[in-house]
Length: 215
Ligand code: AP5
Image (cartoon, rainbow, N blue to C red):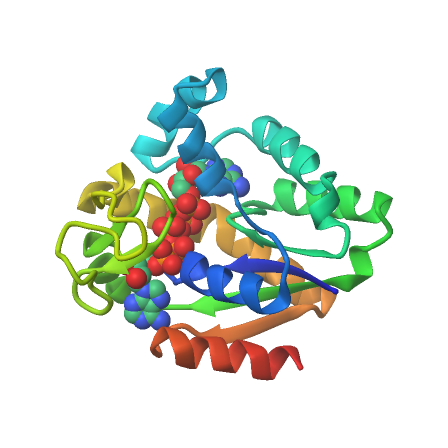
């Protein structure tokens, strides 16, 4: 049973680690960013509401996120564990999550993993990121390129660059992170359930360190 929260700045490698950890522990990977982007892609009412907010690199409202998370965590596949990626992103969301987990009697099982990467590295990484809109595979043109420059190795779909990975938006996302999201790290630190991991190593080394610290 693993109930995990992944923290860290945009581009720290949360999605990259989450995919590997969710396979290893056989728990669902719940990425609020992926859920919101999927809604935008489908042009659902939620997608229409959040499209411009995401494009600007700002945070979507806490009320919308609360509904999404509460609904997702009530699904059967979350009973024996889950891995949250992108939530909570401010203190209000951290407290909301506590309320939800308290009701489920699993609050004391929550462990947060904080992937640490300096801002300079983030800008380099995100400007080179390409993602598959079909299967969600994430590549990096410099450090983890696809075999064919523009196609996903898995499903051959054309890769895209996320709209919020333009330099100006990356800077705004980093501002939001330092101002609003980083206090969540102290929140978990004060509760004694925070694990820090050096995210500047290569992805398999980061995974190895996470596994070691979780054991
Ligand atoms: P979200 O999708 O959550 O974006 P993020 O937190 O900014 O994180 P990223 O997905 O950009 O990065 P990542 O840490 O997953 O890194 P990745 O593994 O891809 O949120 C997007 C937007 O949605 C928000 O701005 C907001 O508007 C909204 N939103 C989402 N959740 C919300 C919430 N709770 N409340 C309100 N609004 C919300 O890796 C990045 C790149 O680096 C890749 O190219 C990868 O190949 C490479 N890489 C990964 N690991 C390494 C490594 N160890 N070494 C070298 N390169 C690496």
